[in-house]
Length: 489
Image 1 (cartoon, one colour):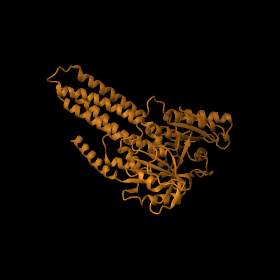
Image 2 (cartoon, one colour; image 1 turned 180 degrees about the vertical axis):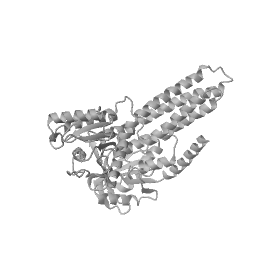
Image 3 (cartoon, one colour; image 1 turned 90 degrees about the horizontal axis):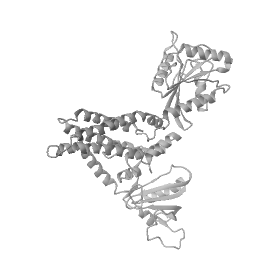
């Protein structure tokens, strides 16, 4: 029943897309505004009309071209209005036949001067060519690349992430995905499932009539068990890739007046948070994004943590939000002042790998007192993790703090595995977990009595992998992915 439902959705989706492919679409592929170049892209069966009806030789005495342009070769052309023949601009024109075009259709690019007026005039002229010409929807060029088989869904998502990437780590992750690293891995997984499925089907179809070896079912079990173990391990390791894509959340925690906001401002290199000598200045969470040595950090400055009868309602709300930020953070900077002994919640004294203790205000105490206070804090609150001593005012220790934080990002979120990450989106994780559940159900039912059910579980597992790459389509997922692109991509 589930398989029939999926096939029905695929047929409906394909028919709808085939109708939309009749149109030739156009859009500007560059951001609006003044620039050296603006690129207008045209894709569809009538794209060559642009060459024949909207371009001519820059030398006026030459006749308009009859032959199509040389594929993948830039030609300097005068762009004209197809109705009035008024010149609009001079441009480099490139033609990509459907056999090599990413969209799988004839594609023409006009490399114009980057003026709003020029771009607007050319787009208006394109609308005059034919009723089959229309402006592209957001992501429609990429959608046609997917429909023509030039890209799978993981590559589409990688392209989107590459366009949106802001740090080196995000760029590397997105580029690998956009160029097919995930597609190859999921196809390999799918092939392993098909091999196991073939063994089970052989037992079902020929087990009673042919001499099928007794070890075949054991071989299928072994293949599935090995695959399930590998997928589970890689699913666990891939969490860091999801975090890098979304941004590494770093919560700055500590008691009031410990120097959290001062440290926050130093990290973001601007006065993002208010700093005063009065404790409790920060009441709500202040959030800022930062490119830190190629890693995307989302820094959270939080309210001071303290306990007591004199904590009023507004302050308590800030403390509650700070604790919530700490629980969801990927890293915690626990800030403790050296100039005064401070009672701290157990959360701040965490010795786990996601917490770095920062002793601040070292300029207010001498070196002997600082060492004594650090030792006291470590003994009293069982601080065994990484820690450093800094003074934001003098700059002492800040380089060490920066190195600490960089090493922490590299060790926890760097791509150290020999294989590319298997998961970069929540969607991937969801379908992989479905696949693992099906493999577990296969192992539970893979015996002589349940062999038919076991085969069905393998089919469902393969479908779950197919939903990641787009082999098994879900229309609502496709719409969400392509609508997140800008127009012209």
